[in-house]
Image (tube, rainbow, N blue to C red; front, side, top):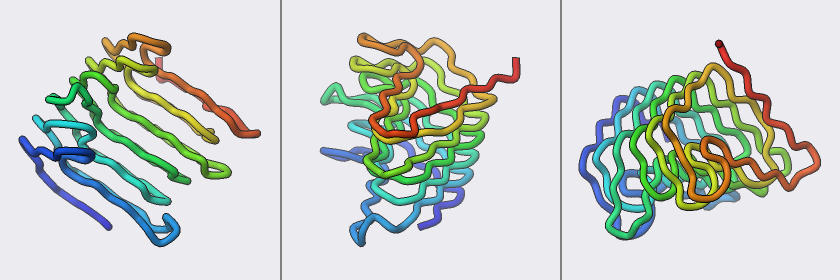
Length: 173
């Protein structure tokens, strides 16, 4: 599925994915591409919940999610092999941070390039970004400003359970 130029404002879901709930049932082999889209003022657990093999997000904005169930998050990805997030803003998420990635894929890989995460809070681990599972990857040319966690990792929480555990963080400063 490819979504381009989508604008979502003040949407709600009783459970997960107040805007998009993408579930790939056929062996988790399909991909989701989001480009030039804006998601703002949305309510409840996860603006986008994705269960897909490959995720690509470019030039998007995820802004201010509130929650009546005290669960608020920008992007939630489970069991994904490859994630590319490029030139994307995540701002003002309460309770569960901006991005949560959990995978049991054999060699999950993330590439976060030129993202900006601002004013995000997680009552669990990872104020801006929580990565758990068999994941390696790179985070470069990105900004993390005023994020915090009530547990571990004010900006990034990384817990790898695989043989190849490495996340390289490069800055432009």
